Length: 74
Image (cartoon, rainbow, N blue to C red; front, side):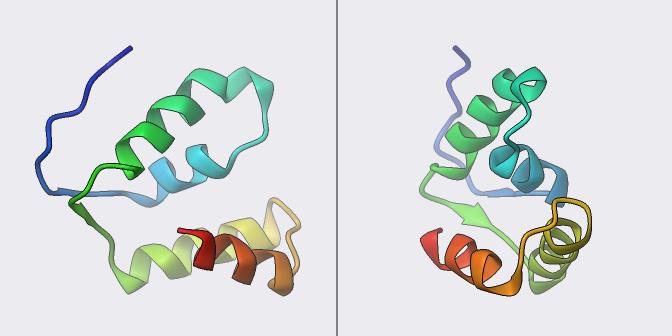
């Protein structure tokens, strides 16, 4: 498995979407995305939160309550 160095990094919306994916075809991507997100020095912008939220609401059919729980879990 890939090991990520302990450096600050900006996490793009696609990485977050892979981390939240339940598609079995994307399992490797999900594992790597979650590993990256668990690093200590993650940088995220409000724009990324908005993009991921919109995508999860529209394409993945999450409701606002589910989305809120997901956001605060990180």
